[in-house]
Picture 1 (cartoon, rainbow, N blue to C red):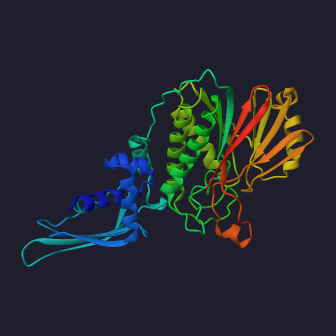
Picture 2 (tube, rainbow, N blue to C red):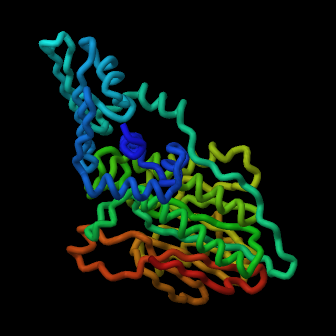
Picture 3 (cartoon, one colour):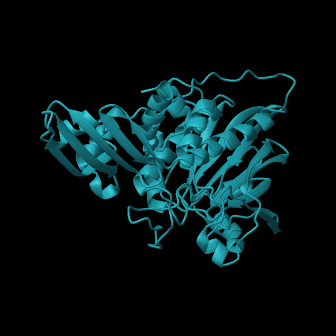
Length: 403
């Protein structure tokens, strides 16, 4: 087996994990550029056959299938022996068919057909094994040095309505590319802010339909079926890894990170589990705080500015009164000099002022799916925002990253 063929085989096995290109590069000991080139090669040849003197493997990347034929000195008798002989990872694949027969030479030839596991193929034991071995990629959190000549500010990084597993009609359907996009956009925004300011607190609202589905039937919280590019479990694992990397990156660029759970209408349940898992993961990190209460509204104060969050799947003109009279937020709302409410849901930017309360509807990085296309909800600018707050002056600027 040539070195390139070996890397292709190893990468094909890793792709089922739905991780970032950085993860694959670290596992394979190569650069992210080389990973990208290998992925292109796999896509250009969705079904290829790699032959050896005693082995034939046929991999279909798009269908998630693997066929293998091997000539050996013994007759494999079980799935375990077949998997070992044919180098099939049973944590990711399930063997659906196989046969074996003796050749005139006295050797044995065996063939197997396997496919990537679906949610129905996993058992509780598989999940326990996943938790035991799961090691998300981590970033060393070396804090950025403060520049005494720069003003200190607080920042909200808004990557609303990401819809990680959504199948788009424009072909933007590579999970690894989406994972890298989320991280890179967040990094670009915070670096743009830090070029001008020192950053005290970063607020990162999560959920807001970060996930596209809420259950293994690939439905939203209310049961609406969705077109997806990965199973619900893969979406959860990849999303968990994305946010760990992103939070760690943000920690390097500020004094503390406040993660705020803003549950959406697509992922209300799954996002609550996600926020809980993230809080457990960062439980020993003093500079990461969580507000993950099971409430559809959240709020906090940055200097003289009160910010309230709601996903926005409601009549948003009613939100100022809701926060003004809410038992948890009315005092902070009333004491603030500036008041803002941030929503998502609609996938396009909008801002308006209702009696001194600024309502800002955040844009989305997500592409167009079949439902949006059929209903003419198209041509919105795909973007994410960084909103910058001075303790006395309120919001002083806004950075936008468009794709």
